[in-house]
Length: 301
Ligand code: CP
Ligand code: NVA
Image (cartoon, helix red, strand yellow):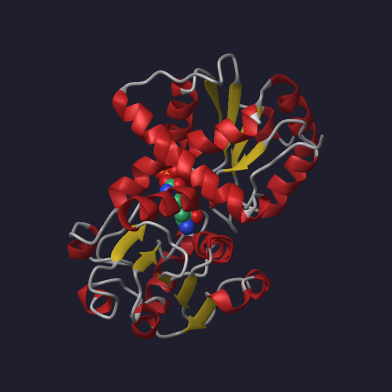
């Protein structure tokens, strides 16, 4: 049987994704009740981080411990990965020792190459192009607050980046409508958009995109690796801030999400991210529960 990976949301069927979300909600309840559930006893997850992280690292490591296993943090600085050992060799070696490998890196092509040579499941913990684990948490959060997301309208305001691409995949897999507003020069990848067909619309008008939305999402204007573009991006994204005026375009009971970390006063104002429509703390916590469901699927089925 070929090895199962989770590199984008398209690696799982819509039914599998829905099952995963339901399981994540159940595991969250069990966690709250203090129930011990250790299906991953003696299993080891290697975590390769080529970019910084708070949520992803802590949620995967905590999740593995709660499921009875162990997680190992690997930084390129302290491993041969950072000294130029071929990715294909690292994949073959690591996957002969551990049970799953989680990778956060730059080029998406790097993780697909790693996965092609890995005999253990590989999980995408963020690349320049996608952040599928974050979407599992976002969708779980929606389900908890509002029920099924099928047929809902979601507005993504800002950079056509890894989060935006994963929202495009989610619109397709979970069957919702996605209204994207991004400035010229920062649009999502046209090939990725093309796969989602009429689930998505794209404009340069944030107010238009937010109109009637049940959920408003944004992300930083300069992602990891783009720090030097901060100033130029601040100019390009002028007018793309999620603030009270923009939220007023959305449905009255619209939710607000942001994968975090956030920059108050840039992509979102403090009154919105810290206000009653924001569910960002549930969203952050759900990284733990959703990824536990993901690990369970990849390592026990
Ligand atoms: N949202 C997210 O992935 O956060 P970290 O960069 O802290 O892992
Ligand atoms: N788009 C952001 C997400 C961080 C979780 C980045 O890639 O830096």
